Image (cartoon, rainbow, N blue to C red; front, side, top):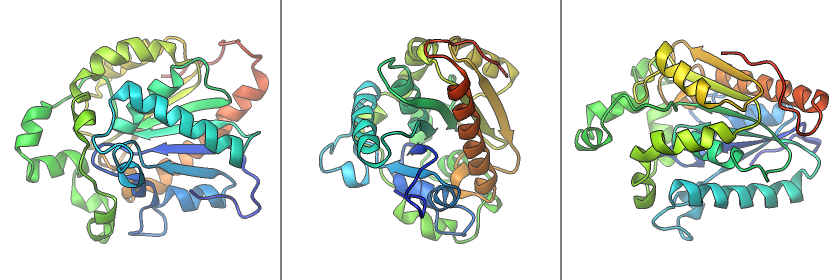
Length: 276
């Protein structure tokens, strides 16, 4: 967690890491420009990077992890408790990467979530571009290419510093990977806040051609605004690469847009601008 120096948060950014990483993903130590926690606090945001169930600090309570629906309930409770204590009057933006993006969507799909400003996700589509089973069998170069893309996209120190952020994917989480296409068809139409989708130039896990993007945005039928961004010179692990600062700044700018939307939209009014 990081907080502004004066303790007054413009909003709370809840950052949800992907599979095979822990919360350290959002606090990259390879270069001063990489950390979302540091940048967010400097710009007036409280940033909460959670260890999702089965990872890091939560692995003792959830040694096998949790499936997507159960994780969403756990994260929802954790965020409610955190904001009530640390920022009771601030809105919340969910920022999810890869599997964490699925959790962000599942949390946002619950209409009882209060003070939710928007959802910002990266590294997640609807249609996998690879067979998860074949990726598991090729755990060497092929899997590294899927997760990272060209190694020159990252500071040289990344692969030493990120060792503390890498973690095995819990058993129950692995079991839900291939079910996302079905689950997303149910969850995405229930998301009623602005959504921003970012795809790295070298994203290889997910289809992100025009047809795939059109299918994804069509499912977000209740979102008042959808922004689709493509990030050049980036691989799947966007928040650890040289383009991390650009991505994080855009995410925080989107949080500002969401705050403006919340100020000027009456409760229950889902009318708004829709971009794709």
